[in-house]
Length: 161
Ligand SMILES: [Zn+2]
Picture 1 (tube, rainbow, N blue to C red):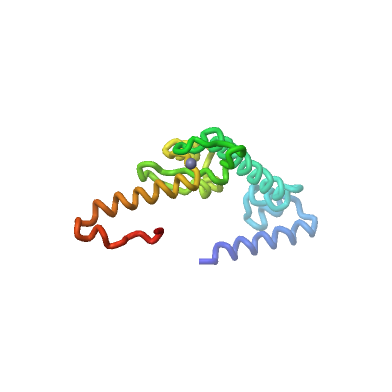
Picture 2 (spheres, rainbow, N blue to C red; picture 1 turned 120 degrees about the vertical axis):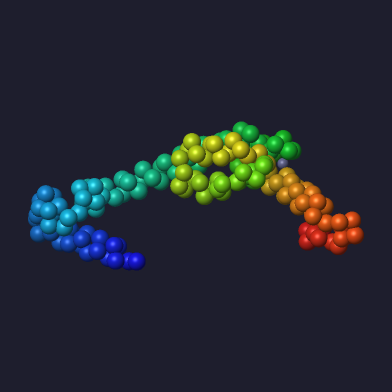
């Protein structure tokens, strides 16, 4: 399983050794069999940091757009929005209305494009944590009523009470 990684690490170590010996990119490429992309990623001036920085900035940009989207929508149920009503983004949640959930939006922020995230958000209601809990409770109750006969209905299914 780790063979590929180990081989790659050995190649990269060799690459640094050759670099320290003063070998040219071309020579290192020939001697290690590493691709130009891999070499420039490791050897390029601040290249690794730059790549990391771009990814971080891109993620932060997506996060801010999602925050703005949530706060501009506010809660679909109690209609509150914004810090004034104590409904900032961190109490606003995406509720997948018709169980079309494919991914958690906060997880998507890491790995998906902004377009994919916005498509997913479009399938959701934005609701505050309180209203989300109320929705979940009502749904559970409804499902419980569908699944139980009249005799079983008083069995005390809820733990929230
Ligand atoms: Zn609400």
